[in-house]
Image (cartoon, rainbow, N blue to C red):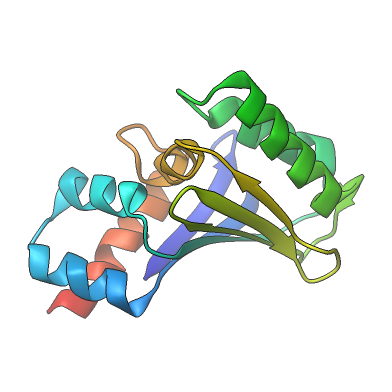
Length: 159
């Protein structure tokens, strides 16, 4: 659908984010006519399959990625955040290499965390997917470029 780059301190490229939706979800959103924040909220809250793909521009510690994603989640219960954190640690390990890809795939209330090198981990729990997509498509995204890139990609599809 689209995406953009996540910068740290406004200048350091950390990773690119791609936002993917299944074709049924795209068709439903196109028919809805939603735009702007209503569109972003509909995607975040959708129970259809959707994926965030993080591709790292630089090597980074696994703990730094886990901490940043954990801290960005809002309104998620502590036990669910802890399960999410454990799944990320299991997939990422101690370090994330430059060029590594992290897939965060949601369907309904289940999140599947995977990359090309490690077995994936599933975390189930109400609100986790909504909060995770809200990190990038919410009212105060961690990267406006990701949100803008998604909106442009969706607009091109809807045209």
